[in-house]
Amino acid sequence: LIPVTLMLLGSIDIHRTIQKTKSRIQTLAMNQPQHLRQARLHRQMLILMVSSIIIFFVTTLPVSIRQIVAAYAISANTAAPLEPIVNDTAILTVLLSFNYAVSH
Image (tube, rainbow, N blue to C red; front, side):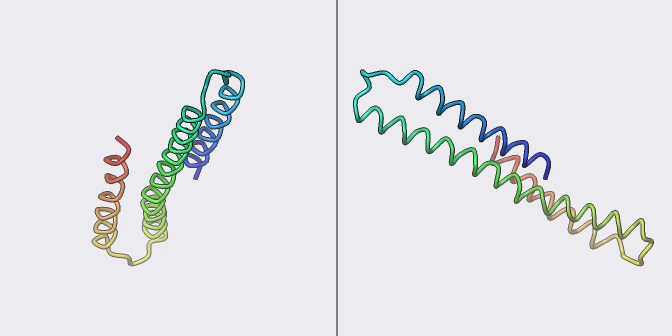
C-alpha cells in the first residue's frame, strides 16, 4: 500500500504542478482549438497515470497478500503443504510480470 500511496501522491503533485504552470504561462495567442487539444492531452496524461497506478495495485496486491499468508502458515507450523503455495506464487508471479510488461 505504501508504494501505491506514494505513486498516487506523486501523480497528484504532477497534475497540480501542470495545472499551476499552465494557468501561469497561458498565453493570449492560444486559440480555441489549441486550448481544447491541450486540455484533451492533459486529461489523457492524467488517465494514463491513474491507470498505471491501478494496474500496479491490482497486480502487486495479490502477490503480497499471498506471500504474507504463506509466511504466516509456515511460521505457525500448520500442516499446509508447500505445493499449493508454490503453485499460487507461480501464478501470481505471472500476474506481476504482466505489470512489468505493461508498464515498460
